[in-house]
Length: 355
Ligand code: H2U
Image 1 (cartoon, rainbow, N blue to C red):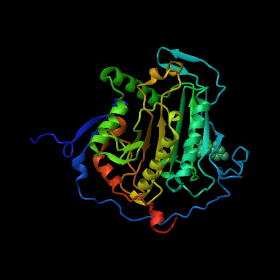
Image 2: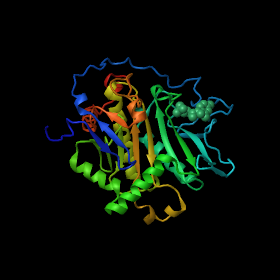
Image 3: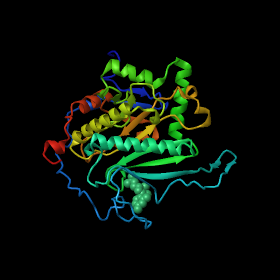
Image 4: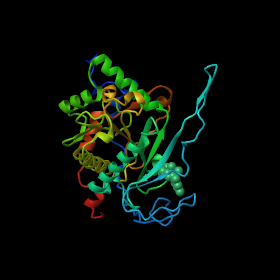
């Protein structure tokens, strides 16, 4: 038998942020490329849609009207999953029927008044405004809640109900399952290795480069070593920053720039408005983390989990083995990073004269 080589042999990779493993089957990716290659027609989305609940001046489902906003606009979700006045209580019946009430709020953040734009089509200044609003939301909601989840769910294939450029903000009194796992993993790594996991990881990725998609003065984007989704990426600051609010204006500007660059490359990959779920993790707002030294195991980071696999219409399904055993991928994270790196920095619509 030949010596183990991660480029050739089936293997499992460990995600130190979650404790999960992913099965990588690179020998399957070596088979000839039979996937679709056609280029979808340029979608014509109007700049204003009278039927859109998020466009400026329009009436929403609950009867409220949006103002004629010009900059990023936030409103409380009319179908909020979390509510501030949920009565505080919990129950535990035999360790089998366990429930705890949770208080919180859900908000919608419209990135732009223009219905037709997506993140890669916004200007760097407009993305900067979105980041500014994320920071405002963190500042306000952290006064009341332990966790503030900023996220964007983009694309019909991903279950997004509206193409108007928008994200969401859900804040809760409890730290949800996945960030709680990250918190514990970051803490344990520091205790065991005497280093901040993600600060160290970014340095190792910068030294290597095989999984780097993009970098600028303040940020690094990699397809993480343990990526589950085919073109999953992790956005990391180069400096140690535990929360988004601590970013300097220069770091915010550089973040806006790299988010635009990343989403342009995503769109160019299959020449479509590339769907994804994107979200940010920073140190939770628990009382014991009020002191910066108590949260030094944290590092701000952003996840992009795009579902597409082979074309604008063929997505990866996390089903079967993934549901029963663990995530699996064929193309290695290194191959995915290389494909993203090869994409043009010019958005395909602009290249076709459509922007
Ligand atoms: P998604 O497209 O990512 O599902 O986000 C749209 C959100 O906007 C969704 O959570 C809310 C939905 O509840 N919404 C309102 O709050 N008011 C409306 O009039 C329509 C949509």
